[in-house]
Length: 231
Image (cartoon, rainbow, N blue to C red):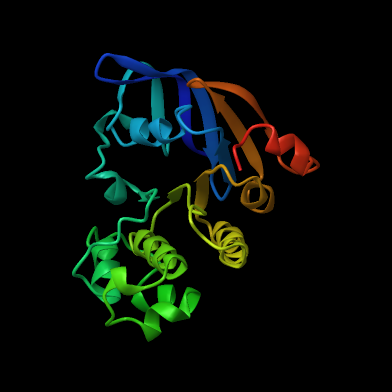
């Protein structure tokens, strides 16, 4: 079943056209990556799905329904959770309180404080610590945990490896594969070809706002993937 479909989407910020006829799909339980260097429109794909970037041509559908009514402040309730670039942990709130923000949408499902802390035990240990007082890797765990608390059908991660040590990226890769095995679809926006190679099943490559290549990751060499990314 196709969970998310973009069909010939033109995306704009004001009068500036960023996306040029972008088409892509994410199936239920699938792990899909969008590759490309900085400034090619990867984040704009996410923003088009959330109604932040304006779609002037083409169509976006989520779970078979036209996306027109979804906005960034209603996406979580609809089943789309985003782990934003830079994590955006809320200052002044504890780990527990940051997680509670994700649960505020009230969607039913398996993810709650205990199950998220089973996935990331450090969050239980640091539950009453300010979220911004943790290390970068721990904050990324918190950002993912907060998104999972919304019990999403689709988890979108925007450059999740940014600023993380290689050993933490290894842990992140294993976590994302596990999540997809538990019926959470993954859309990974990433430049780190090693993470993409370990996590994604399929990929799309963006260049200058258009899809220029796509395929399956299985059997593709690291060298082939590296051609499309900056790190």
